[in-house]
Image (cartoon, rainbow, N blue to C red; front, side, top):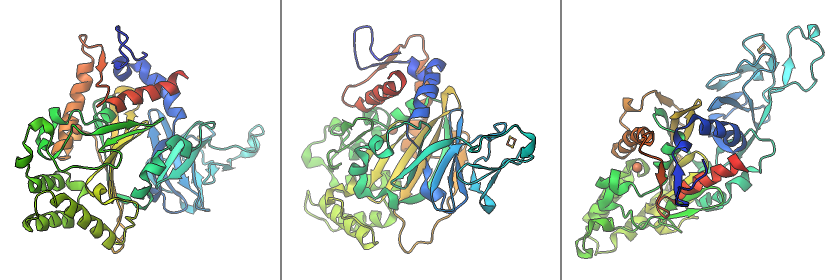
Length: 431
Ligand code: FES
Ligand SMILES: [Fe+2]
């Protein structure tokens, strides 16, 4: 299942990597147990005893905050007969975990503290515990890794901590948390958000305000990103594919389309700001700069630290792919992250979380996190662009199974992040 077609083409990805159980099992054995992955946000375990169960394929890990404030993780299996110690999320009252089956007790770091009728057992190891999983935090995320010998988290993430420092992800909080199930391999779902090549095919309605052609792609050792790099600049111009003459470009219409089309990332006041600037009738070419400067002021006036941004980043996203399974746009002040996991060991199904994060306003009351689950993605309207993506993702998975299809022929520039993902997966599977 190495990448390359019969002609030695390196940009060919055999379809088995997406549809075969054998490859899914290789990932289950070699990738997932050895890679850092985002289990939850720190804000999900704010107090001692709070826990989140992180499930991945057929594995379950508990993330628990202990009395000292430390976040620990361990395999969710009782050292007696394997019962899962906790499900979902919640809080261990009284600072201890009790297995529901025979009542063994655990400290919040996974150490066994009491074995019922211990004297009847042959001597048990003194350090009996639920097996630890490494847990390290960055940017407000709790990462876990089942491999005790894995590289440190910051080495794995490099250079994302530097690249993303101005966005202060650690200051962001959930605006919403929604989960659904999609009928496709987890990688097919990630791929759908990791390139701009499909904009002209699937989302042509946004071409009037999206210059898809000048999107750039950059791969790091493990992760990658795309956007108007290096500073994620957005130029206020339609796609060159539309062939609109410079004199005919309507900047006001483009700016309005941008802030309404990407509604989630732009708040109501910012839409009002666009209305105000548009009606001020600025000379040609000045509208975007004026909006960017005002948006920066607006964020600063809310007490946010915007010192790390250049003005022209105010209308741009940096679309970051956090290997292996998180992707999404990060804006000044907000971020949308898609976390995609295999649904059990089924190569044709995945679980997708949509996390919308934002800098909370100082005067806003803390929001109660509500996690919503949709067993079928069609149960809800996810917005026009995402509905197009979701509808298409199932077609991709079905189409790949065709006897007339051997593998993916990727565009070496615009789909370079996808190719890179497969090469990094191979590092885990074959090295
Ligand atoms: S399985 Fe947990 S106490 Fe028996
Ligand atoms: Fe899309």
